[in-house]
Image 1 (tube, rainbow, N blue to C red):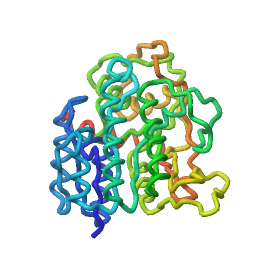
Image 2 (image 1 turned 135 degrees about the horizontal axis):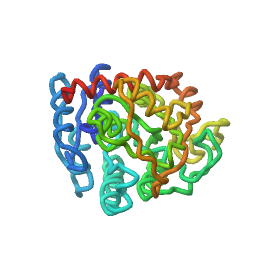
Image 3 (image 1 turned 45 degrees about the vertical axis):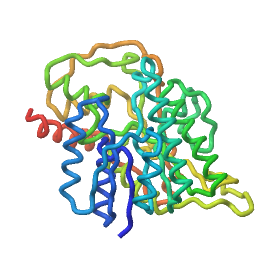
Image 4 (image 1 turned 120 degrees about the vertical axis):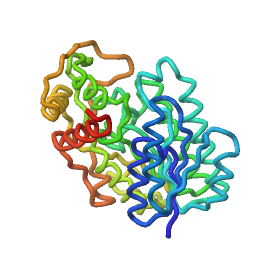
Length: 336
C-alpha cells in the first residue's frame, strides 16, 4: 500500500484529494494546523469524514515550526507528498502579508528541507494561476514568463516555485508544481466567490460584483482538479540527460522539475457564473457593482495542453453542472 503525506488535508482541496487517494488504495497521513482563517468547524467536519475511512490518520501541526516536518517525514517515510497547506486569499494578503511569509515561504522551506533529509518518490506542491499576474497573452502557458505578480499572495506562491526548482536541481528531488485556476465545488472555502454569492442570495442579501462584472475566470470544478493531481502523481519528472526539453513542456533543462496548469481552459464571464448560481437557487441576486479590487486581475485562462499530454486528462465540467452540485451541497450542509 503506497503512503501519501498531504499537508493542508482539512482544507477544501486537501479534503477532496485525501478522499481520492484513499479510494485508490493509499494510506494517507493528513497534516493540518486547523487555523482560523475561516470557520474551523468546516475543517473539523472534513477531517471527521476522512477519519471514517480506514487508512487515514490526522496530525495537527504547523508546517512552519522548525523540526516538525523533518521529524514527521522521517517517521512516516511517505512515497509521495502533496503540499497544499498555505495561507490563501488575494485580498487578505494586502493587510496580512506576514502570515503569507510564515505559511507559504517558511512552511515550504521547512518541507523542502524535510524532503532533502528524507527523499520521496515525488513531491507535488500547489501554486496558483495568480502567478501569471499582469500577463495579457492568453491562454496562459507554463512556458511563458510569470514575473509580474499583482498580489503578495501570488508573489509568495511564485517564490515557492523558484525555491522548489533550486532544491530539485541541487538535490535531484522530483518536484511538480501545479497552478490552480479558480477552483470551486462542494466543501469550498467560505471566502470564495461561489460560496459568498450562494450564501448572500439565499439570505436575500446583495452581492458585491467587482469591476462591474467585467471579469473572466477559468472556473475549475474540484473533481477535475483532484483527478488532475492524482494523475500527475504518476507523472514523475526526470532531469533531461542532454538538457533537451520537448516543445511545450515546462520541464526544467537542469532539474527533475515541472510546472503544470490545471484549469478548465474555458474562461467564463463573472456575470454568467452568477447567473448559473441564480439558476441553481431559483432566485435573482441583488447586485452591488463595484470597481476592481487591488491585487485582482481582469481575466484568467489556462492552457491545459501540457496536463493532457502528460496524463490524458483535460478538465471539462461545465459551470452549470458544477454550480448546481455546489448549491445542492450548500443547502444540505446548512439545512437551507
